[in-house]
Image (tube, rainbow over all chains, first blue to last red; front, side, top):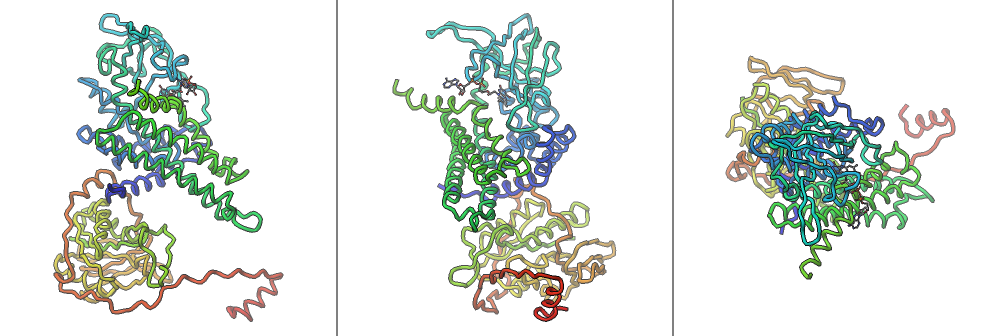
Length: 385
Length: 250
Ligand SMILES: Cc1cc2nc3c(=O)[nH]c(=O)nc-3n(C[C@H](O)[C@H](O)[C@H](O)COP(=O)(O)OP(=O)(O)OC[C@H]3O[C@@H](n4cnc5c(N)ncnc54)[C@H](O)[C@@H]3O)c2cc1C
């Protein structure tokens, strides 16, 4: 067992950290203040990421991507997690689900996404179907060569910037022992398709500058050649390609927690009360010790899950554990960071309240903590049923 | 034109160094090591010469223990073409480094050797000068600008006490870098991947016919004394008085 980074992995970490420092961090305040990443800035980050080869680093080299394995990708996500989510998102890692593209879909969606010409978003959640995705009400009805789509998706991240949507809709139902079960199909839908309206969603407390939208489909016609994977097998495609997304959430949390930790440590070493640095009080220093320990544990859990992914031995419960622990760790670490900063911690200018606010969404999206616990406990109990 | 760049593995500039308990040196176990920042500037300059069509090949050389290969890999990831590692566990002092580099230069025959003006660990600021002397080449130290002319000369702007001095030097040339020469790039992902495939030649001091044994003995390494708290003066008159009579600076 070797827990050290190879010189290549270390170079990657150093290089991405330098990229973050030079290309992203200078714009953090602007994004916080204006709640947006200007389109020109997105273009600028795209260009820098393409030049340095970090764009689409998750995609295979044969397709023009960076060809990183999951360990390297996890290190990359960790480093990118140190800066504003909205800014780092412009260093795109196109959703792995696009790898399911076939035939002409490859030239129309997958390759342009890797080249930075087109950007995707993923639409599963609906007002009445969050954790319980299979209960989705958006319908796709077959009509000749087309599917006709009706329904509403909400909380769809980046749909304001994206060019096309990976959409999931109910395409039928089947009777099972436990009752009627919806069949789900996945589609690639261009954003300018008639019958699709995109509205900005409400303001979120986390991740300023990173927006989500409501998508309203009204008799929106999509040709059957836009089906991703097979008809009625949308969740198979999702299960095959989306598991590792939870690992990226976890790895970003580790990076953000490391940044909080550095700020908290610096503050504890310099802020004086009762005639000494507050870090000299055990009430503060033990907080730092717990934070450092938890961050390290989450880091190892992420890297182990990445390693298992590369070995082909990963299970859903591994992703769930990494996401659950890292997101909850981040909540504790950023909360304690604010505590160590005292009143200053709440002031926007100081920059730790942002980390604390941003931490909140991580326990909700990509499957809530409860859903992750459900996955983990099911993996424990199901064999005994 | 071949360019040879020396790259030294040193304690990372972000690390707060600690003196070893026995006072023989500074702690390097479990400490992040990186390329000497002045050498990074050297690699950047060499790679820019190559990108600008002035250099044909960039060779990164490091001397020391096995881990120096990581430093060479970093140079390769920045764009150097190949590496040379002179493997030795002996403590290397500036004269030994200069002799070893001379031996590598004799073998490779570059027209330009770029070194950092100093390494941030021992701050010796000697190696480039010694190398130029051993080779009987021109030297241009503390460079903040380099222009290779077509006629076998180079114009080098040097950072000197009074300001900037531009000299013309004949090639072959030993140049040492100052901070403002350029801003080193961070390695791109494809270059990090390619670095793995670039060759690193392994040499030893014996094979180069150089005795690297240290000439100087370190007696003791100590932490710098803690800065004493200052005193507050009540008036300008008192300040002037102290400056004149205690500090004796005016
Ligand atoms: C900013 C933001 C961006 C998003 N981006 C996207 C996107 O791009 N694409 C997309 O498709 N979705 C996106 N989502 C949706 C996100 O994945 C959902 O919010 C999440 O899955 C939870 O669904 P919900 O909000 O409807 O909560 P609900 O499912 O209503 O859950 C409410 C509460 O009940 C709990 N709960 C539900 N079921 C169970 C159970 N069986 N056992 C125990 N507890 C349970 C939940 O854990 C939670 O605490 C985004 C959400 C946000 C906030």
